[in-house]
Amino acid sequence: MNYQGVFFDFDYTLGDSTPAIAEGYRLGFQALGLDEPTVEQVRHTIGLTLEDGYSLITGDYDRSRQAAFRHQFEITVGVKAQGDDRKLMVEGTTLFPGAAELLRALKDMGVRTAIVSTKPGPTIRRIFAHQGHLDLLDLVIGGDEVHHSKPHPEGLRLALEKLGLHAEQVLFCGDTVIDAATAQAGGCDFCAVLNGTTQAPAFQPFPYVHIAEDLNDLQNWLEL
Image (cartoon, rainbow, N blue to C red; front, side):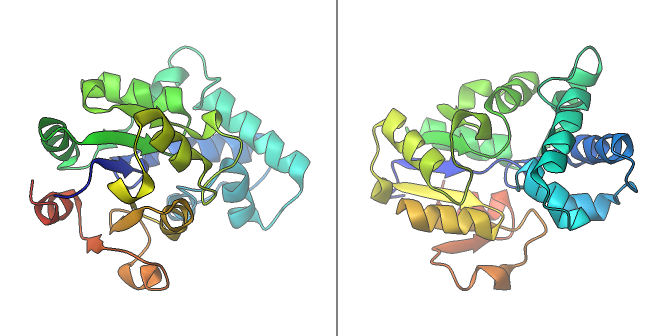
């Protein structure tokens, strides 16, 4: 393998937080007097900012209502949740089959690993700590740690800077065309991982080096 670093999106790339995210949407919409979205509707928002997810489902782009939804989500299942509610996102998230094995294989090869996600950084770290795998990550850049969300390459560039790597040394792996556009803007190679709702044909307009059916496929392609 020629890469010095392999970076990942989180949701629907390495892990699945669907139950917790769906509950956050349900409670947020309920608090705002809106019809509760279906789990399938919510699944198609995963990887977007909460504001964009709200608007995708409702068609409402009013910034004050977007902000109100974000607040409700954050106090119920997000970073501002308290007590048992605070555990829902962490304990309700599972890593996909092969995630820990892939990260361990990369670590054993001396390859630097990072997550660049719209999900808050502290939440991702708590998820990996809960799973007992925080040691497999060199760096996490969450959506709360940058000024611009993906596909802006700020998070990707920040990860490169912190790990002392150049874009041409890094493979970025993600499940959406937002991730593909992020890699393109940041100058990194891109590998699509089909763990989410985006199908392979959607990636055709973007440069990519591989489309992996799952993380085991990715590990095999990397010859780890």
